[in-house]
Image 1: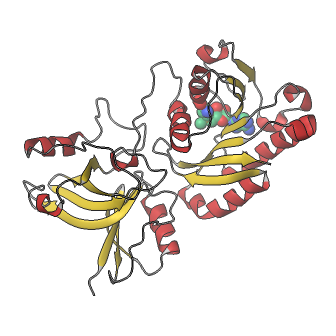
Image 2 (image 1 turned 30 degrees about the vertical axis):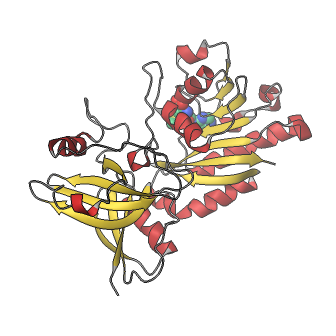
Image 3 (image 1 turned 90 degrees about the vertical axis):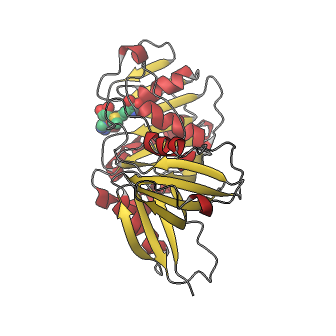
Length: 343
Ligand SMILES: C[S@@+](CC[C@H](N)C(=O)[O-])C[C@H]1O[C@@H](n2cnc3c(N)ncnc32)[C@H](O)[C@@H]1O
């Protein structure tokens, strides 16, 4: 009976939440060593099939520990542990909250430098579903971890399950990244002309992403939106809080998507969405077009993460269906719910 070790990667700061989620779902595991953005768990025996789903919203990559390299040349001991022909993903644990990276920061530079010095090549082919990927994870100077994870449906083929999406200089906020990452992960149909109601739209990063796809956006926010968004002919602005919207404000608005990103505690934000949905239902009845939701819920305090089952119940009581909750790489202290349907 040999113990098995698992690893999990997550956003910088989300470690305790991941630990709580994983141990709740898999009480037989024991928390082992961790670093910011990275943690390991011990299972007493490797005789049972490995856990391939940690049931954790905040885990980015979950896999099995293979080995660790330490010292001046940490890759030396790891090379023989990687079967030839395997897909290798090299990346670094998160060291900053998204958006807090210092000027000139280049993701994964240190592990790529180590590999270049050792004459290794990076991933040279795209993984397929069901394949084991080897993960070379830079933890600290002189400490590289090797693990492997099962490549599953919905994962991004980029190292660390982190899609490459860049923020255009024209976007007034980083929320552009959240909307684009959600589209990239959940692959909703994005036809030009899609009608969206965005609640909490200022200054307009997510609207910028949607307008550049040819969507028609109605934005609601008490704050001002950036002129580049305000002046876009596809954008209509209602400068109010969601809870003060009236039938008159929404009488010509029949959205297919609802995008939510308010800096309020989750239940408060969802109460305001409830008001908006009541108005839309009373205006449009069976003709309401709403069919998808893109909801960012803020964890103003990390302890709110323990109430996520309650928030998801509330989201489904509002009428959203086929929910998938995840912490996007571009999320900060928040998580994201994609609703693939609405009744
Ligand atoms: C994180 S920002 C939204 C970012 C925005 N989605 C973007 O793409 O740039 C949160 C926004 O929620 C707005 N907000 C806060 N309370 C609100 C309410 N009751 N109704 C509507 N918007 C609200 C704030 O004014 C703020 O602009």
